[in-house]
Image (cartoon, rainbow, N blue to C red; front, side, top):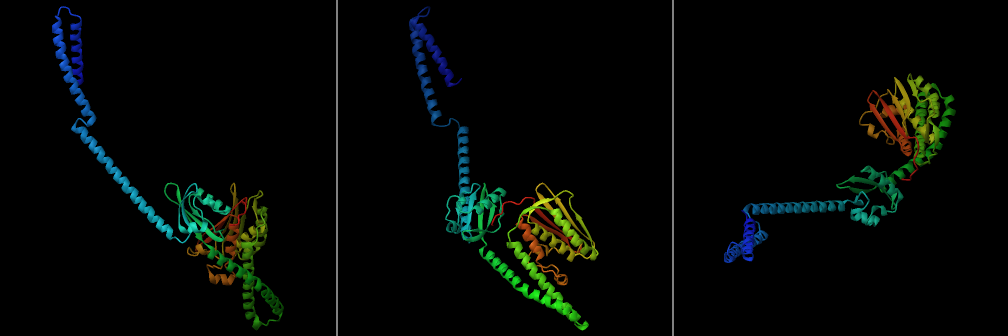
Length: 421
């Protein structure tokens, strides 16, 4: 029996003896007094032991097993605290190392959360923008639009845009816990160099146009007087003059495509394709090629610059005609809910895999010998890409050497509001 049980039993016996004392009956009253005294002593001893046990229970555990459990729990807690402390110290070291790396980047760099709050900014960022709390404080509507789009996608790189009298491309990369690395890549020198090159090319094309036109006129005057002995030399001169004229025209077309404002309107693209089909069908037939046009029967309305769309189609068809010797060429129009797809497919000489990444660069020619024979300048596809991008579209090519090429242009049916970045 536990100590509490003995205490309760002793208390019960003492109550009985007290009744004997207060209400004497068959038992003599002095026996009750003696029993009461005895049980009072017993109860005093039990109470002392109970008090001692209670104090012991409050002062510490009552068994070795309990002591061991408390000790193990304390040791485990200390070990976990140590591990957490080491993890925090390691994280802090990594963070300090990251900060050192970011401080060494020569471009404005910052770490932000998904609300645009600046968590860290290197000295380049602070010196350039003087912004300390939120990156939205940078005074540029174009920057706000670009950053919102990048945060929505979670990562990416923007096109160059003007900011603080410089040109930047923004690079956004995700980090842990909805944090992002935001890097402003300074493209100013590159953009200015490209602008100088474009201005020089445009001026050169304008300067060449007048003397080349004059030379063409004189050749037409001299042509009836050419003797059979002079015919070969005259043909070489006429061929190279034609190439120079074509080059100057392509340069001027490229300049207009890059800088002239687009005259956007609702255009039925079927009409442009039908008109070009009448022009190019005889040319393909003369070369022994089969030309097929697949267009919808119903109106095919697109919001675009009609001259730019015609320029895109003309260059794609010229490219197919120039590099296809046998087989056929197909021009196909199709659409989805908000986009139109133009596909130009040929069975020509194709393009090698190493040339495809450079195909839309200015003056890049995959087959230089054939280009000299056919009069290619390497500007047609560069112009196509420029016009497609200005219409917020995409262009791609799939090709295999000696098996043909497929050029695909995707344009939105409706043009978004024009942005100047």
